[in-house]
Image 1 (cartoon, one colour):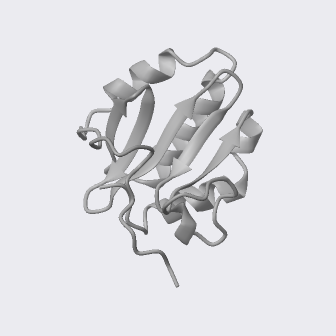
Image 2 (image 1 turned 60 degrees about the vertical axis):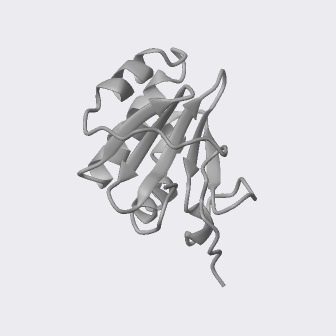
Image 3 (image 1 turned 90 degrees about the vertical axis):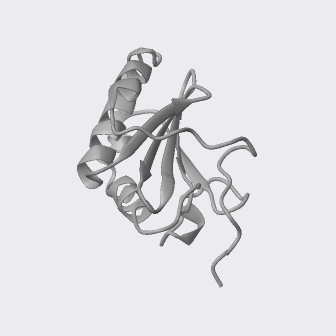
Length: 135
């Protein structure tokens, strides 16, 4: 049985306000650690390629990607040594991303562009557009 609880994102705070402009994401990408910038850029390109009509936001130093009607479907955060990609409906994916056990969110940690280009990464990004996200 699939979980039916409401996805609340990474906190109980109010979700970010969406915009159709990618400008905030561009600015966020420029501030990412130089070693991880190519990883973040490749993920951003892939997410936008798979999902036309996205809405964007940056809040709490995290980038958000959403679709009208589904809410925020993907969150990306860059740390010192890895990029975490959170799929808010990831527990419902086949197969689900390996990390995370709370609510419906699941995530992966990536360190290289090669990891970002793995076929399973694209599969998860595609599946994110078919399930309810954080609203």
